Image (cartoon, rainbow, N blue to C red; front, side):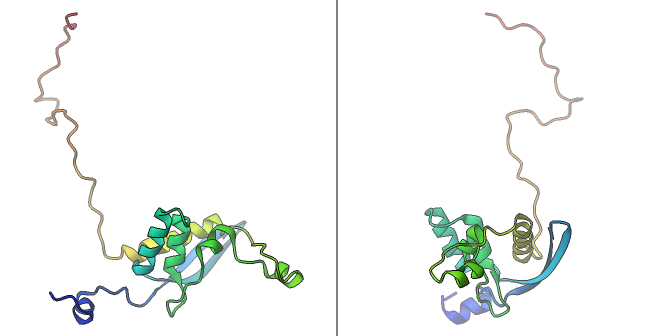
Amino acid sequence: MKLNIESLRKAGSFTGRPVEKEISWRQGSDTITATVFVRPLGYQTAVSDVLAAGGKQDSIAGRIAAAICDEDGNPVFTAMDITHGPIDKDELAKDPDSTKRMGALDGNLTVALLTAIHEVNNLGKTTSSAPLTSSGTNSSSPASAAPRSRKPKKP
């Protein structure tokens, strides 16, 4: 295949439109349900992962910020919004120079968003069982295996 836009399009190498998902999470004693849009993993995620590897942003916050978007694919969060919260508008109204943030994203909401991201990126994929590894032991059944010697080792 010659690498060009048309051959990549035919191969499905572009992430396409965001996927609409409904999520629910517990907030205190309430269950909240919301509709989110999830961008399949792509370029934005790769950039986020590189920034995280370089210690420039939190990896989980970056993954959420890269994946959660509006219906047009525009980001909803920045990594800073997730780790520290957006700028507090009430504080900003009192002091236009305020940089006070609202606090990190709720843990239950974070898990719900990560679950939605996982579901979108693993649709139709089956997970295989863990690969077999050699432990250095005989895998034959106990009935056919020779019994171990009970003699003490010589010094």
